[in-house]
Length: 189
Image (tube, rainbow, N blue to C red; front, top):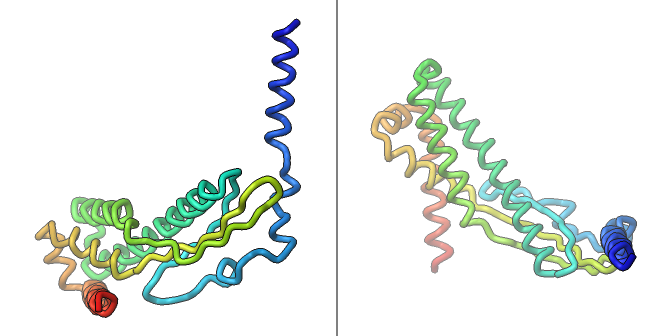
């Protein structure tokens, strides 16, 4: 009998803890959504990603939102590099060279998985949302950092670097890397 009462109390506690879904839109209705979340900045030198998450702990809400935004930037970066790979394939005619394409894909994956450390949370807004905290974040990532990392990966393979260097895609990437280097110098002054 005592075990069944404890079990019922446990189930009731879990059920009430999982409730509250009607409060998840409370902050949206009160106008607490930041403008930068709705109107994401557009800058050719950065990738931006807004995200929002909720938690009972306000720092955990920020951490969850930051992680979600960084994941989205990773996806955006992957799309950008796949576009570059397509240009490379079209210009060099390497569609049938499976080894070269595999090396290109490997460089792309390495860049996506390792370079997001250059991302930073540009804006954060925390809003009390019922008994929860809602965090809005905007993460930015300099595109030049990804281009620079990708160029380093390509240079590690002489065959791929030689073929890639002869393309217009390489010239465009090299120009973006130069612009990023200049930007880094300006930031350090």
